[in-house]
Structure formats: C-alpha cells, structure tokens
Image 1: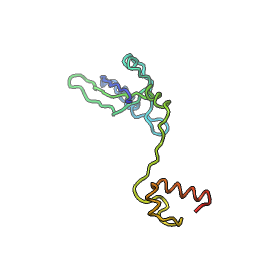
Image 2: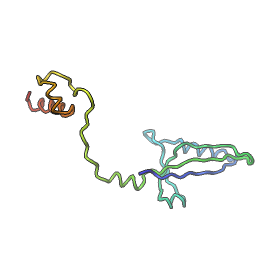
Image 3: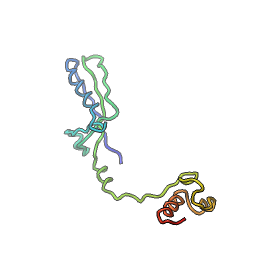
Image 4: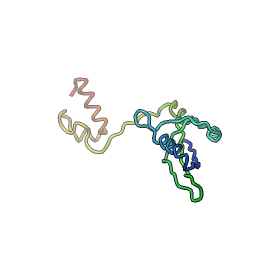
Length: 141
C-alpha cells in the first residue's frame, strides 16, 4: 500500500510574513524521537480521500510572485496512520524463513571435533550453528 498525498498551493502576502514563518515551523516540527510531527487535517478534499492525519513531506517551497507582493507556497502532506496501514498491522505475519549467508557458520571450524566438510555438505551454515548450540545446551559433542 502507499499512503495518500495532498499537494497544497497558497499565496501569502509579504505583510503577513509571520504566517510563512509559522508554516515553516510546522513543517520542521518534530515529536519525541525525531519523527515529523503528525497533524489532524480538516479539509473537504482530505475528507473525500479519507485522510485524517498527515505529516509534511518533500519540504516546503516558496517563491516570490512576479506581479503581486506575495509568496507562492507549495507543500505536500502525506497520510499518516492510514486505514491500509492499520489493516496491514492487524494482518497475521508471514512465517519467518531461516536465512544464511555465504561462508562458514559462526564459531568457525574446529572446537567441536566434527568434520567441517561433512557438516557443511549436509547442513546450511545456520543449521550447523543451531546444531552446535543444541549440542552445547544438551551436553552432547
């Protein structure tokens, strides 16, 4: 799934530069942990999209208008905690498959008295490590 986005464009007169400063502070605001602050949005377009909470994304751009004494502002809001995200969180997780990387198992060769070549042919690196741990816990080997 992908979160929905809203792009906003507006104009702020030069005399209202405090509004531009406030908008920039909102775009840069963070919560504990350094994450971007989440805002509740009340807007007809957002409501039609089913968006309730957003955060700023892709920065805020401001440029001076050629004819008017104003800034043209554009920014993007990205949906946060969307319904698809909630559904994905409730969905049962897929089973985890064991993975092993190339090379020898952790612990390397020796130390257990096993023939390293025989262990590598029959077991993957991860399985060989589990076997060593099992033997150590069980008192075998």
